View (spheres, rainbow over the protein chains, first blue to last red):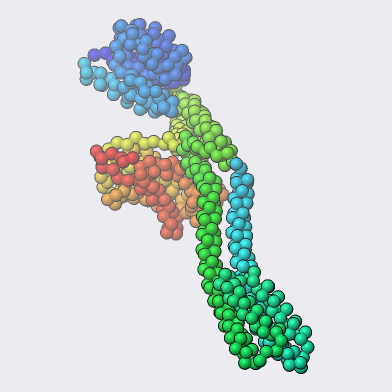
Length: 122
Length: 476
């Protein structure tokens, strides 16, 4: 069974770089997007994904990005984690919330937990 | 009406009431006194006149007889008779109808006597038969007149006494009514001034307790009304300022959290060899970066906690928890920190029942107390933490042999941004938020935190959380 890919959606390039590097180091294939427009392009590629999304994006917010993903026919969502530095993150339907500043190990644990959960469901 | 004018009016009315009472009392007694004087003068006049009448009659009879005998002038008798006529005339208007009937009888008898006195000398037997009965009758009438007058006078004195008693009752009644009016006015004025003032005091109390939605309703048209008019906009601006502060802090914290994540993340990545080999020295430096970033993160969270508490938005997320293992795990790292500072650190947590708590917040509160204890304890000192359940509360004690808290500083200890820096320059710094947060956490759990006053060397903080059994929930 193939591992899900990780889509990191954040408008801050440093956060995207760290997350991509770290998750790749942990054996995942990670991609990054800084805007809803970029998310749309990647979503069109289809496949199994776990999504890490920040609330604030260059051209919208997390709910816009998730709506685009939901409309992509070949995109299979294994889980979504809201990664936010906001004081009160908006209540949207996600599998987990990670508050910035986060530990990379916590991030990995959350991703692996979702991977395990989606694997078990299959 | 302005308060000054209202008070002036009240004083004016009270003075009027006092004056009316005093003047009416004075008038009533003046009137009664004058009446008593007038009546007693009249009585005296009548009685004196009767006495003079008696003397003049004696004189007239004696003088007439002497004149008739030729031993005296007839002029003296004439004068006496004239005087008697005068007295009859003077008396008449001062007499009652009964007394007047006596007087007219006396006049008739006197006419008969006078007729005999002025007639040529008659035989003494005849004179005796005609005049003596009339003289006797005159004496009787004068006695009666005196008696009636004295009785009337006595009756009048009784009537006056009754009238004075009545006047006293009337005055007392008037004074009571006026006093009641005065008291009512006083109460009403007090109510109109004090009630809005009390509402203002309650409003400011609530505002200072952080209830910034408080508004007050004062519609009086005076200085307090003006104050009330300014109160609500002021409370509104305070609320706006508080909201702006929260929004600002929220924005700042967001903007700080993202770079903190990046700093921490890069340090972790580099340390894990993602940017090439790392020497031991570089590894130590990276660890310091990670540790300091962690501190900065805590600081941001502490600032936000204090801001939330000030805005009355400090909340906890309670769940059934097993406190003992979680607390022991959170205290464990302090053993190493204490050892590095040369401080003996130990903890002994009893078996605690499963309880509904925000265990993360409980750990945070205990960590803040332990951090403080380690901060203010010098090398060679001792810090210990105990945890017990007393049937009502989960009770934790953090005891140290540090520098202690001077008695005059204790009341400020749990205020935000308060530090004992003046006394202990050179000890590790901080923003003075730790204890303020501990207090908020304790309060949010229906508990408390306080400094044990009876500890002489060092200090001992007691932290209590009200025990809530799972499935009972927290009572609001």
